[in-house]
Length: 169
Image (cartoon, rainbow, N blue to C red):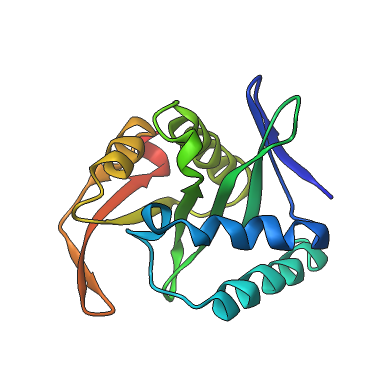
């Protein structure tokens, strides 16, 4: 299990198979999933299991768990993945347990993943999307240096689009 980053408050690490139920439980809270793509429990389980392929192949991008320092309580998920078919863009995403909302953890994590991307890859641009109503996540992305661009449509839904180019960091 590889640790991606560690701060005084939390660490980001690869998932292990024993994290499966913890991971899935995050999606049981309707407030947490309000602004996420609608997925079944089975689809979330498939995403979790596919994550291990990235680890085995030692890919730089991936889906990781965030855990509290000290008691190792599960905070949520963060990810970096290719954005569409554009090799010059990577998408930043995250989901936090409601207990950890409003504590600055998401903003800190986003800043870490921006730095991680620009340090460990040659990908020149980070992008992110949120629902138009998800003002909290929009603030997190702007705090991490991403700028709001023109809205986009994905899967029939209008989304707020954010980006940051490496040379503007």
